[in-house]
Image (cartoon, rainbow, N blue to C red; front, side):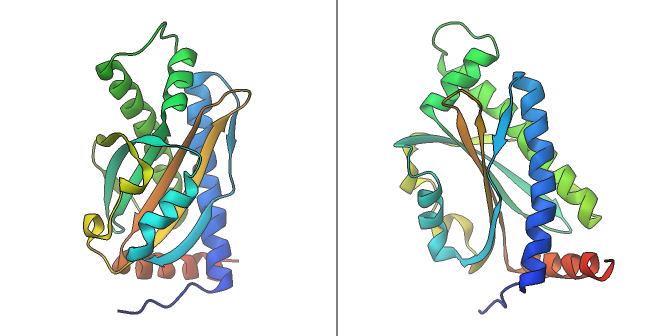
Length: 204
């Protein structure tokens, strides 16, 4: 199955609305941790599913082991979100939220799920506002704990041929914390998103 790439205008529009949505997520994280949050420029592309694991590995190349929270979203558009944390990021986040000493496994898991839910909820709400759709999404769950990044995803995990791959990383000023948020949407959502982007472009 072949998927037509987005035009330059469509890609620019998607990057802009994603940037706004991710900015809302960054603001939510900043309020939670009471610290300035730095966002990367979102990267947006359509990829064959075979290359998704490699794309994830490239994005998180500095982390040896990661813990990953997953949430599915659905309604008009559907897909998966992954929020990827490295060990140092978890520790910095715990310090900022007032946890003294080392976290036990349950406390760390609760912290990761809370932060993931805040980020994903803000991103989906921000994206939904701009493309005029309401997203439903599942509660977050721990997909992988302290695993090598190259084992996080496989093409069998997704079961699609192509994916819209959107990524951004969040870091904290003067801290080692960094987490990566990835959105993946399958073929039919790629086309529905294309229609939404055309509608946005026609309104200019």
